Image (tube, rainbow, N blue to C red):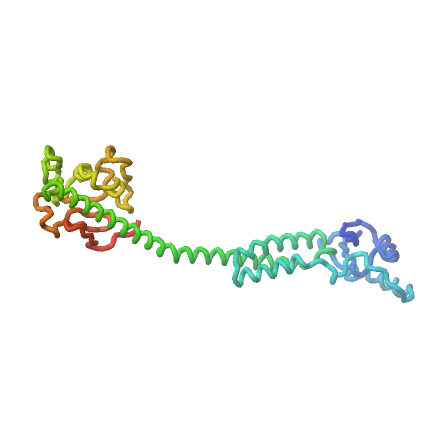
Length: 302
């Protein structure tokens, strides 16, 4: 018993050898017709099956030369292979330069072409080309993704460094504004900073809580009395700090301040090199004269 693929791409059968011989005599089957013998999983040209080739030999010897009918199934040269070839071309391009841009279309076209050739081998050919197409498409896609990962790994440190540098510059600008606010306040208060002026005179002397290192735990209180000189409480938080800035001066607390203020009688406007404040994140140091410099190693980037 046999099955055949007709010129319309449809499958016919099973039929016996005699029926097949009759169809060959009628021109419905020719040596290029795709045939599957019973018990076989493969489709072959009719001429590749010995018993069928014998039928065609008998028909040729019995039929005088004359016009030959068009084959009932597609000639191997007439099989549609365009999609398979397109897949292979796109796959090669994806491997060479374009990666996912042409790799994904190559995969899609290759699988479609391969499935067509399996379902209708008489009409669609190029199964091997289709496989090569979607395989190269996958390779190009993977190479493209790998390149993206490599470029990202190369760029990320540079971007992180640029971000850290920008934060450090913004921190320095914040501290310069703080230094200017201290000097402006001192001009209006006999050249004294808030922590050296009594509270009944508008200062914060009695509110100081200096530690052994000279830095004041109540730094936010000194900033509160200078609120008119400071533009916004946002400048009290370093850009690299995780602390949240206060929304307004009324809500300012110690947790809304990044910068450490150094207080005491030795910190006066007449000694410009005295340390007035520091940023513990960037190691920026604000001196009484308003200058800001980084002292110590650069911090690790957050």
